[in-house]
Amino acid sequence: MNSSSRRAVVGIVAASLAAGLSVAGVATPAQAAAAPVRLVVGFKSGVDSATAQPTLSRFGIGSNESKGGNALRAALAEVSAKALDVPAAKATALMAALRLDPSVAYVQVDPKAKAFDVAPNDPVYAQGHQPELKQIKVPTAWSTTTGKAVKVAVVDTGVSGVGDLSGKVLRGYDFVNNDNNASDDGDFPHGTVVASLIAAKANNSTGMAGVCTQCQILPVKVLDSAGSGSYSDVAAGIIYAAKQGAKIINLSLGGAGDSPVLKDAVAYANGRGALVVAAAGNEGSSQRQYPAAYGDVLAVGATNTRTGGTARADFSSYGSSWVDVAAPGITAGMRNNGQYCWDGNTAACWDWYYNDYEVQGTSFAAPLVAGVAALVHSKNPKYIGWSLSNAITSSARGIGGWVKYGLVDANAALSKGYDTAKPSASGSNLSHNQLVRGSRTVSPVGLKDTGGSGIRNVDLYLNGKWHSWDYVAPFAPKLNTAGKNGPIKVQLRLTDKAGNISWAPHRWIVADNTKPKLSITKAPKNKAKVKGTVTITAKASDKYKVAKVQLLVNNKVVATDTKAGYKLSFKVSKQKKTMKVVVRAYDKAGNMTKLATRTYYRR
Image (tube, helix red, strand yellow):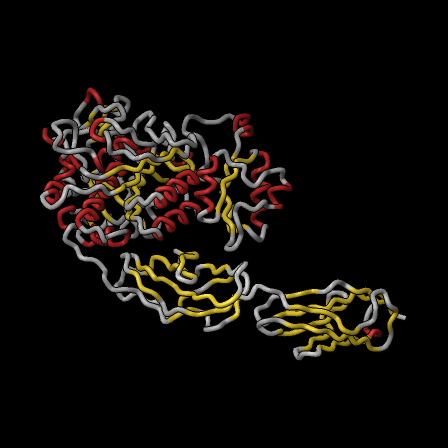
């Protein structure tokens, strides 16, 4: 294998992707000018991503300009983001304008992700062509469980339900072509090979054996036939998989570029209890690759299957600060035509250009780990997210400092315990009978997790019904009382990363979204000429008490009264010749009523 040449080519592709170039070829200046640029825009808390943005309108761009369709739009809305396909000539200026927009949290050219494969692989277990399984003790684990119908998402080039995947592939979604056909049309069927390693049928006298032979595959197509895709599509795919209830999400893809929308998507999936498993990349260096390098992602490096599966494969990215575990990176696999590959099968699975076996890379180490996670969940159905990751990392065998925990051990992972201690909080930042109007956030007070897994998410319930949630620290779900008036029972549900749940003490608050009543009982008539001191007497009332009545002249507060029989005065000599006079009242909740403007003229 000419590994140095292979890494050089992969490095060039990765650099091109980070710059937003096509891997199909180098674009000419004219083509680059004509090609639209996809931007990802994230919005600050409280801003609706579906709302029309004045900044976009000034550039003649609609608020939903992406060709990604409704599914992409809906998925990214979950993390307050949107994708925009804009003319290249406008991209730079638009990005500069959006960065000045107070409603925008971030904007970036959408990075590209690439399938992390050095080559492809398809073996037959009975003939000894799947040594990778023994190297991580999967056959020993099978004596305990071969898995159950655990839903594992493969976010990749799609998956074709042929051969050993027949009847095991669920209906998914294609974010590349925006339809429900998530089959694999890759030049190399990357997603199908990945899925076969996770869930290929066993003991059927044909083909290969997956790690979790009873598992189901949820196919999510985010990479095109060349194995390339936008981060926004990958993010949407992660969110889609989490919302479809995938327990484990496999990402045998990535890139060197960081991206808020991708990070937010991973956090969203974690918040829903999914374990995200990602390939560490094939850079042969310590350069971080994303999404593998994000926290709460189980990052997988590759060992050299050919030398016993404990030494790092020369193509594998490494780094004990971000690569968690390792698994064999030269594996078997099934193609989308039902053909099987294994190391040494020159007829079907040989890359004649590189003169080596096709199926190698961290792309194929990651699904082995995803399959092990599915076995752990099959034996321990309560294990989700962090608990699955903890079982794998705490049972890994040390193989050197290039990876944080070591080589995955499927059998040992099955017997690991998990955090059973419930989180707790002493209450919330709301007080009993507090008046609340509109929207605000509710934060837990004294939030603790003694079990060690950490807090996963906090959900807000109103009168016993789910209202909202937050899955990112410091955990402050939004309370929206719009349209509500009267007492409301507010309670926070606390969930740690191991899935343990408890409730903070509830609070009764009072929603008040009704404006106070206000009228003027005595004042000069509109358009009157005045001098000296002008006094205006007002009447105000509210079910939950009036806080204050104010008098404004030319938009400045000149008098405030907090007692009924409200009298407000100002000296004419201190004002301009024309005076715009407004009386307004606030209730205790902050609702405000403002009367029509009166105009007075100085004599």
